[in-house]
Length: 214
Image (cartoon, rainbow, N blue to C red; front, side):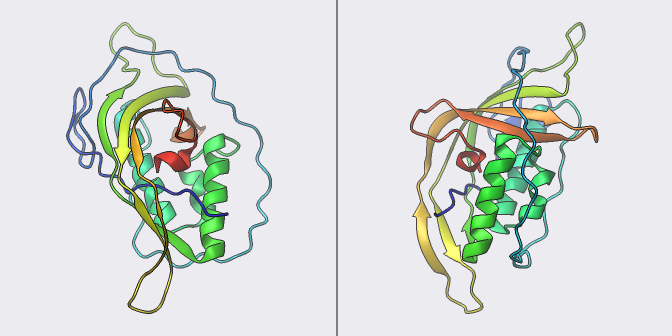
């Protein structure tokens, strides 16, 4: 079964209430929202034994602490897209909370890519709006669960085999993500770092999966 990978992040334009975020799309803040409870269940112990290829580039730094959720999500997406371009199941927990649907999906995707000796040539998603709980004076502070919604699309991507030769062997082209709203559930761990938990797509034709976002 082929994986369903996704996009290298350049979420371009201005962050409405938090300054300019390099690589992030046009952002707008909304009113505070109550986050539903994402479901985290214990995941299976890893038995994956195949060796991932050496990364072709250094992993991007993670900015996944604090209350500026658009910056957090931009950073998580950027790292997640680096991860499917340089698949390594052992690094999934850096961006997805163990036991959550997002972690399970990313584990399946990265394991499949490693097993095939393949990677995704990610493309930049285009974010045209963001709605998120923005704490301010007199409002309830963020807890350890939060939801942020983004309007997003992205071009089609190439799934390719790793090769020592000069020519890239493309296995297939992954379909584009049509413009849709992605509702992203986040969990904050005991290390105070936010991670993906669940991704729900408003478009019924798009799978509710982190793989549809990345």
